[in-house]
Length: 276
Ligand SMILES: NC(=O)C1=CN([C@@H]2O[C@H](COP(=O)(O)OP(=O)(O)OC[C@H]3O[C@@H](n4cnc5c(N)ncnc54)[C@H](OP(=O)(O)O)[C@@H]3O)[C@@H](O)[C@H]2O)C=CC1
Ligand SMILES: O=C(O)[C@@H]1CCC=N1
Image 1 (cartoon, rainbow, N blue to C red):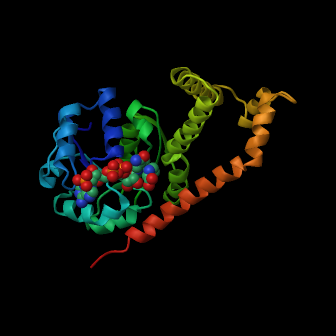
Image 2 (cartoon, rainbow, N blue to C red):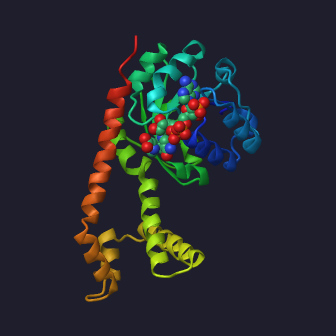
Image 3 (cartoon, helix red, strand yellow):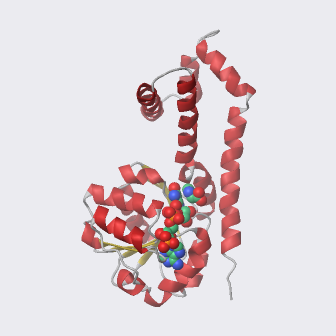
């Protein structure tokens, strides 16, 4: 049973996870402690919205926390880890959502044989629909992995992967929602240019995405088979898809995910270099 969760880092991802876990009701606001670097205004805002204890006191936030969620940017990893190092206990489970940063680095920087789980959720956690992947570090055992899975299960699906695969996962599903929002931005622009009212186009676009996602989830059919059913020879979809082919839409997406993965690898290399 989890009595206390500590968040080190209070940005977008922390807030998405906090919203998701509190909405489920399994964890109560008084069990979630949050700290950041120095942005008091942000802590006050989170306290007002979620009624969670927020403070600029790492010792107090870390004290008796069963799970510590690291949610700072990769560039701030070392400083944040050093700032909690004096308060980390071996019994605590450290869960990192940092892109690119290895469990080995976290273990080294904390200097204790603490169990570390590396996770890659996405911001759909806020509504219970994250696709999260998790991998365990050297000192993490089966029960630690199970605890992390239980936590992330409250905010969506959880998939166990090898740690080396988390770079690819980051490029695919960690960043993934942004690619979809980018697509929607373009669909909204196109709708506006075609003279559709904003409210009307919004409803149509969102339901089109929801419907397509549900079809992928509930039918046994491949995306390609589903696409072909919409594409009448000589029809409108064919005209649309031919335009996407002309602009190398699929190639662009493949390169997008490859580059996001490569950036995750790069972030690890950049920010795992220890400063003396
Ligand atoms: N956003 C997303 O969609 C996803 C993000 N992630 C990962 O989550 C992590 C956080 O990302 P995101 O929430 O977007 O980032 P944000 O910039 O929104 O938040 C970063 C937080 O870290 C805090 N911070 C910085 N330095 C320290 C420190 N030394 N001690 C304590 N807190 C510190 C900041 O505090 P202050 O404001 O005071 O500077 C801020 O609250 C990243 O590593 C990212 O790779 C993973 C999956 C998805
Ligand atoms: O852009 C980033 O680096 C983070 C990691 C996954 C999503 N956002």
